[in-house]
Length: 118
Image (cartoon, rainbow, N blue to C red; front, side, top):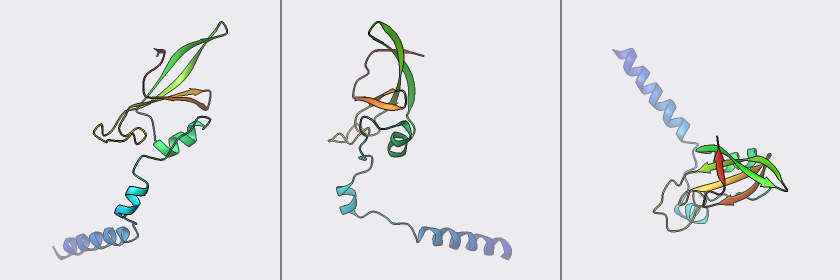
């Protein structure tokens, strides 16, 4: 019995010691840089987008025709997390559609464009 109590206490102390190094954001930090507002820009590669916004909720492909040739373009969909947010904080308040040509982000939209192919 004493061994299990000792083990529980030690685990709790280790857990609390690990949390001691955590930097909890202040209200000022949150106002200056709200969650999910790291901007993505056209021309970024997939790894850069993933580093800022994480994995997409869904990935699909759409057909596009340019100069008489048909090709597909990758579409990453980030679904809105909190639709009640009054400002558009990236994909938190509105679903975003990111269109990639190869590895490069070509377009960012609030609405789906074109037709999906699976």
